[in-house]
Length: 251
Image (cartoon, rainbow, N blue to C red; front, side, top):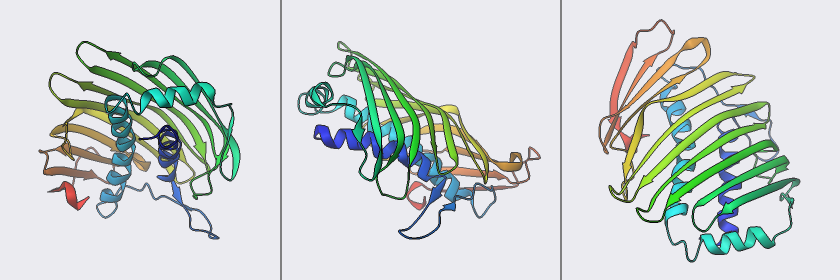
């Protein structure tokens, strides 16, 4: 991936978190995402939650693949490119990198000031802080992505953690996030870390709880790389009144 595309990945992925809270088409009014937990809405909410994890996956893959062509050129670009950078439509994006991006040991603070790329997902204000460490002997990496972003009346706070094991050839991840908007609050908490083998499209184990307005809950439990179980407690009384095991591809 070229350096410019790598930078775009982080910008677009940061805004992706906020697009889970709302969406719009050109010339239309923003429609807030419906976080109301119900049997009919559970799949949509789970999809949005895993969209957050996709950012985590994309980051870890970029930190561990083709470093000679990707990360070194990216680091050079960060050093030579003036900051802040103008966003496509309006606002700015600022970044500060300390440490050695090429080695995987760095802290990267991305700050958005009313950043709008004209994609209907902004403007966004706030920050994303990425702390990464790597072991050159084992090829293990670990990183934490902390969010404090606000856009279109919604705020995303919390963090995603990911570690990659060179020995086992797998990625372990988890997240602790809160989304607050006019339509209600949602939390996404990992009960059991998600483990995904290199090359696999879906995790082989893991569990998370999504809590929505009125304390409604969705329990997501990985069966294997083919199936996942989704249980719904829509009224928040502590009893999951609906449960279904389905193919990952159905999500």
